[in-house]
Length: 599
Image (cartoon, rainbow, N blue to C red; front, side, top):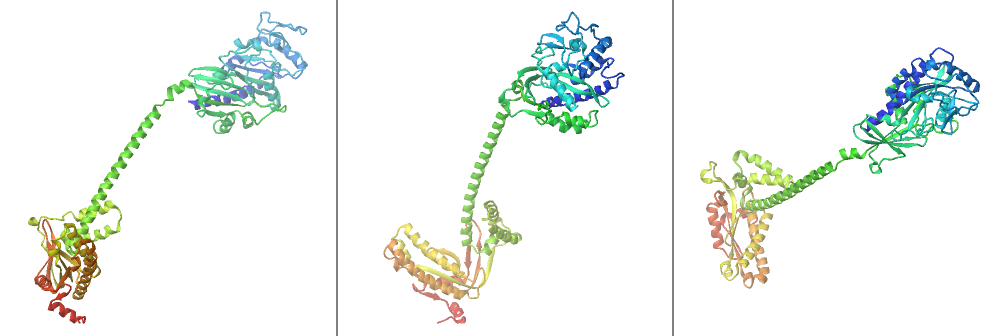
């Protein structure tokens, strides 16, 4: 809507200079010796042109340089009065100073207003520019023969037009030619002075007077405040409201609370857009460049600014009441708060889910660690994964170790351990079992444990067992010995499975010696906290080498088990042995001797 007001400001000015230039060419083409020319049907022509530019009057005036030309013109004016539609007297009393109206519509000769009240004969040596033909004649008849050089604002516009020989726009006019203030509701006016040439000689001017309020009528449906400024120092304010425009007064009358919402434009902007829109019109590029001035850049030879105009368009209070509402801001705030709430709920939910998943993952990792300690990896994979998917499971296991996302690890572990306790009664898979020919089994029992534990608290009993078995586990890991189980206070382990080991007997013998030494060290240390008699505990160790059957007994409490005569012989070697010593079978001894490690 504001852009439409700016467009009206542009188009009205462009149309004025175009029409003035066109009419100037039409007037100069009339028969006669200028300036003694009267245009037939001028009022009809001028009235039609005014509708295009929303002007209040359209006129042309000759340029008379001295008193001789003035007298010649006054004689011509009487003779041409009938053709011009005027009623001028045929007698001239040049000695009179106060001619009055005498009941007629015009005075005898070129006149001025004396002290702003009564018409008087125009004196002086010139130049003169009497209004000759004007439209509409009904409202402007009194201005015929009025010398525009007698009024300061009109005189300045004419002088600048004569000096530059191009169209000039006057300052704002608040008074008519009689010195009377115009309708205060309508506001100020301006006059466009366009040079009239006969050949290359400047012989007069074409003038279009318009009220600025009419420029902005019927442009927008909503109310706006329009501030008009000129480089000549005047400012006027208007308020548009559909078909009506109200003059607010001189100066900037808009409410400053609306600053920052205005649209601004000037003749300088209009000049830059001229070529793209009106390059093919009658107005020449030279006239365009000279008329559409950038504010404050052009002055005449007397240092006076050539008036160029700019406007600022602000939304009026009525416009704000209709369109500026806090509802969008309220709606935006509510939507933003809902969005923030949803984000917070999502973050909280995600935090709780992540927390729960971490707990599940930690439990599964601990469970998996327990399972890994109970089953050799080859048997564990066969237990958890169907035969046709064991290869894929090994690849997934390697991938699980390579990633860091808890979600992926959790998913992998859940998939891997989903069938941890299968229903054996309905299982179609074969039992998980294998035979290993070259193994060495150890049984290590704590001598005197039954009597010692009967005199201790439960936590002391488990403190002893956890400390000793943890040390045994550490030694087993360092020597690649696989712990099978603990039966009461008996520690059972094996070498040679699940991965075959050529030196299984040597590894087991070294393991046996080291755990006896560990047992002696730990019992002495624990005696301080567990009481007397702890250091008297010893370790009986028995070893036997041979074939075993290894497998997983599936069911509610699946366990990795070893079966065979090798287990029985190892148990007897332990039970018949001496605390603090290692008793080995002949088969194990032979293997050690064969390896050239015997004593």
